[in-house]
Length: 353
Image 1 (cartoon, rainbow, N blue to C red):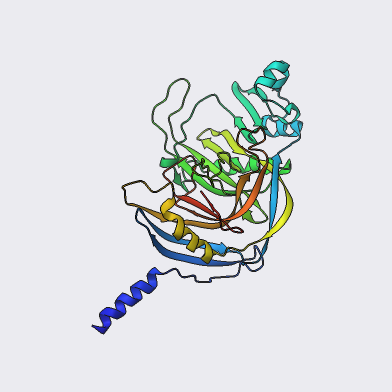
Image 2: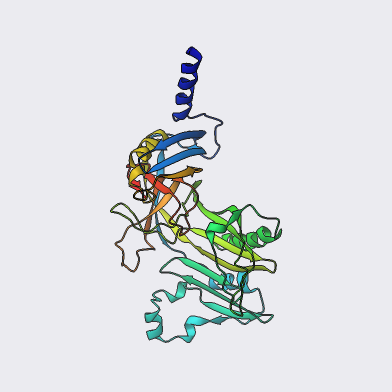
């Protein structure tokens, strides 16, 4: 009987959150790596947390940044994409003032609307200032990016994919667009169907995430669902798509950041876990009348982008603020509503979902 009660006690003890300091990180003073294992249960949702976390110290100062659209040397950018000795057209020079106004081109000197043909293949580029979004296309085909089917770490299919992608990331860094660090390679299986305007075969996406002061910027695309929710569907991330012929597309967002002040971390990881437990039932992931389960494999201290202007303002997605936050997620939410993602502000304790 005593052994039976002892076993129950040990099982309950294991189910409670515990942290195991593993090593001192060289990234930031006072930071350590911890392991989180915990079950959080509510009426409609059970979360199984199992992840390693790099945790800064409570009370540590963190820089807060304000963003603006990025600028770049146009000629150097053209050389990076098109090479030398190629006739490159500037799309915006072909447009009238009225067309530029209709396209909401407010800063044509910073837009990167170029096009050319190299060996018969069309190449086009665009940097949309209003969205801080970069698009480079090396073909005219449409490809379906289905993140539900994405398989991580599949470098074997096209072994040169990361090297080819690094070429462009290194080139952008040389032009001032830096702090894009390699995250992962994803295999997109493809639809198997194709026509003259599309390709249905598999391809890979090499993902690079933005990092500021050693703190990653969250790449989750979430849409507003409540008074504390922010619409950030263009996070800072660069995706380079490759197939057996090489790089065929570059898509992502890039902003410039300027430090404006410092704030102290007042919410520790332990605090954030308690806040998560109190708010899990109110998550959009919870469905009425259903009992759901989710495995939280990603827990991290990161920057979450917060708009400084009201929706509808022309600079809504340009002027943002970086908020230090604790992130709990099943995986990166790239337009997938079925993924559990919750941010907890590391200064105020506010829940950002």
